[in-house]
Image (cartoon, rainbow, N blue to C red; front, side):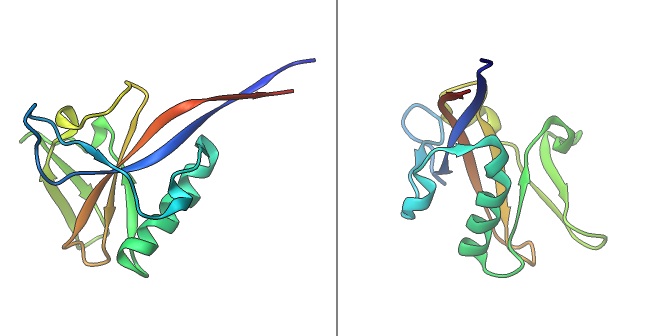
Length: 128
């Protein structure tokens, strides 16, 4: 029998305020659905639901990667042909527990509002 492994994640919001240690702490969501373990394959659907719940129709999410860093040290995301979101890069100041954490930004339709979200690894499930 061959075992398959799937990593589980839990979503957290990122505080808008630095704590006394100079990092942005993680905050739990009020929505119980985001407290459960989410498989890597299920993250996209869950992030879609979270963007929709946060910003309504037209809310989107983007995973933050090195490709989003610009020469000014900011995060720059092309929303569409006419809109670009450019914000301060705080990725090294977010209180994540693991190098395997994934950082996302939820954005409203205009992109005038955004919110940081972290997918924190919460273990691995083995099945076979």
